[in-house]
Image (cartoon, rainbow, N blue to C red; front, side):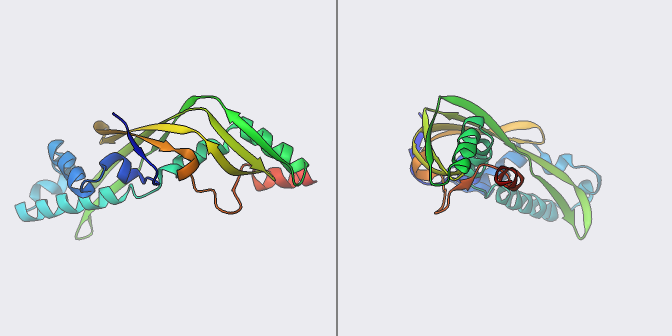
Length: 203
């Protein structure tokens, strides 16, 4: 059953839930023997130092995902051609606004950070993470004014996320957002056109 939330989500909260993110990353690293698989100088580490490297890698790995999920969503909204067309219309007619209904659709965003591991300045290797987030948007009603996305009147979005470590899927979560409540548009909205496009339109 998908959870329902009215609060903005970070990628960490989405994939790790309310639990200890570092502990969950640590469990994955341990289950996949990720630190040991780095090879090289790792084999020469003492047991205590190996544990310390593992724990620090888990803490730092969890910290890589402290970004808002809506940041990934907004990347997709900014490239939606229906919204961009409305932006061009409203840019050409100052003061006008346009309401756009987007049909149900899905899209995927990937976030692929990596963690370089060092001990006393000596590189041990790199741990590759990959977060794949799929957005399944229900009918979405948006308001565009002055080439900016100003409001999202309605629309639910099911979000599923898969976390892979060193190319191996490790965690999966799903939740639901009310886009009208959680997408931060600010007082001025979100620009849908580039500065160059805006200058050309005025030129």
